[in-house]
Each structure stands twice: as C-alpha cells, then as structure tokens.
Image 1 (cartoon, one colour):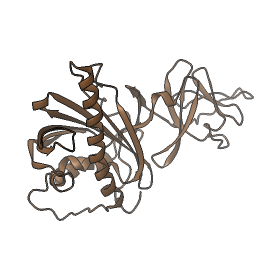
Image 2 (image 1 turned 180 degrees about the vertical axis):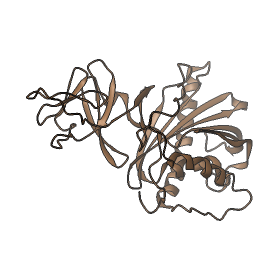
Image 3 (image 1 turned 90 degrees about the horizontal axis):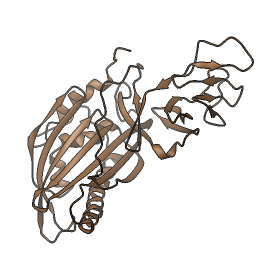
Length: 321
C-alpha cells in the first residue's frame, strides 16, 4: 500500500471490475486490480469466472493467448486447462494432474456490472449485493476514471456533512437520520437546499433529501428525492483498488420514470449533469489530499470517527471458509 494511506492491507468486499458486455461468451480479458494481474473469462455456458493471470506451470499469462474450451481456460504455452475454481483439469501430454492450480475469486453479475469478491484471506463473500432497479428507472448513464485515492476516502463523504456546504454550495445541510451501521452495511439521510440554477430548474433553491447506503467500502448507492417536483434520482459510486494508491471509480446515474417521457428525459439529463459536476469537485479534492489518521475535528464535521471505526473492520483478517 502507498504510505499516503497507512492501512494494513486492501479492504475486503464486493468491488466492480468490469461491465458484462466487455467479456463476451468464450472470450478472455485481462485486468489489473488489487495490486495483481487478473483474468476474467466467460465460459461457453455463459458463466463468468475470475482467476489469477499466471499459469502455475511456467508462468505464462493466461490472458495473453489463452482461450476458452468449454467451461475451462486453456494456457497458451503448454495447453494446461483450468476450471472456474482454478483447478487444473487437463495436461494434454501427462496423465498426472498437479494439485496446484490458480487462485480464483467469486464473481457476481448485477444489471450489466461485474462484481468481484476480494479478500486477502480468500474467505467466502460476507454479504449479498442489493437488488438493482427495474424498468421504472431510466437506463444508467456511466462514467469512470482511474485516480489517486483510496475507497475509504470516497465513502467517507457520507459522514462529512460540512463539505456539502463549503465545497458544493448547499444550504441548511443537516442529518435527517443518524449515520448508522450494521455489520458491513451503513446508511444515513441528509437534507439540504441546492441551487436551482445548478439543476436547471426555474427556482432559486430546491430542497432535497438524500439517502446514502453503503455496502462495504466498494459500493455506495445514493438516492435523491425532490418532493416538490416529484423527482427521484439514483447515483451509484463504485471504487475498486487498482494498484498502489490508484483506484478505478465508476459513477452511474439514472432517475425514476415519470408519466411524461419527454419530461423524464430532460430530468434524466439535468440530473446526470448536475450530479457529475458535483462529483468532479470531490474528485479533484481526493486526487490531491492526504489521509490524516488523527484528524483535527470540530463540532459540525459529522460522524467521521464513527465512520472510520466502522471501516476498520474491512482490514481485519476473516476466517477462511
């Protein structure tokens, strides 16, 4: 880990590593996450698998010339084949199979996103991913970046009420529901007034209520409610460690459909533009700040210490399943 973020190890949890369409049936793709090279391949059955990139035999990269054979991945160097659990199931020139295979990771696909369960201790997933919205929401608009930060830094915004006023220009920002945690999940609700001009609205100020739902340190769902306009918007923020202090950040937005399709399309566009503009303000801060393990806090900062205490669990060793 980078000395900028003095955590003992990378956190465990569910993290987005790709979009489903990026890995077609019978295709292999290479990725760099969690300070290591990974290979994702989609078996001929359609099932997606994630394994370490290098063959245990003589170290060939399985994503550089490797191919899918049935539900297995074949090494391009000597033809060894590995199943989705990483076991070697064939050596074409030997009747004896080695006991050593490649490491595999649990993966889950949700609404076009590929989540990978990362755990340095190779434990089983510790919680389920939440359900995605159905056809009552518009299609997601998606943007992603690789920036210098850490997942814990991004998610700390949910406990930092003060920055909404100074950085984002919100007024009357306050917690409507205490920041609370239950195991790996955490949630809170805030209220504030935002500039109508920033949202493309014909009024000076609009009152919003926002629900934050955290699922570990890799996945945040933000639901925005504008009661006076009958608008509900949703933002998803996913932060996945790449290597060192680099993180791939996925930003997605959509809105609940309203009776008028034209009005829905307009609101969807305005919501995305306004949310993205706000998020880019945070991105600039994250890329250039340092992590203060013992921050100097004052009344009005928000439950930052409670958040950090909750976040600490994701670095603790877990019992391997």
